[in-house]
Image (cartoon, rainbow, N blue to C red; front, side):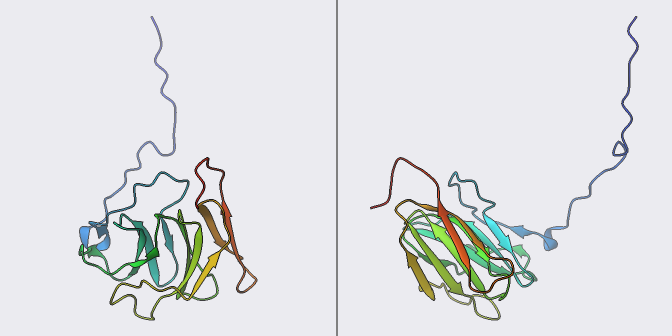
Length: 159
C-alpha cells in the first residue's frame, strides 16, 4: 500500500474574494496586439489602458475614481497611426504620459487635470528616429524629462 503524503502549506486555507462590480473597470476592449507589455500604466490619479482601435493605435486614460462599466464611446488618446505597444506615466508629473507604437514614433501627451472629456489626437511632442516599432517606453525614475525608448528586432521594419 502507498502512503498518501499531504504537503503542508500556509496558503492551504486562504481564499480570495471577488471585488464588487462597482470597484472594477468593465467593458474595456484591451488591445490584442502580441507584445511584451503590461498594456496598462497607473499613477496616483489615472489608469491608462491600451485598447483596440481602428485606423491606428489608442489608449484610454481613466481617473482612478471612475470605476464600473466604461462607455464604448469613452474618449481616447489616439494620435498614433499604428497600434500602441507600450505606455508609461512620468514619475514627476501625473498628467504626462508617453506612448510608443508600431508606427516607429514616441509621443508625449499632456492629460487634462480632470481627465479626458474629448478624444485627444494631438500630442505635446512627437519623437521620431526609430527604424523599427517602438516596444519599450520608460521614464527615468529620478532625473526629470529623461525618457528611454527602444525597439526590438523584428524582420518587418517601418518605412
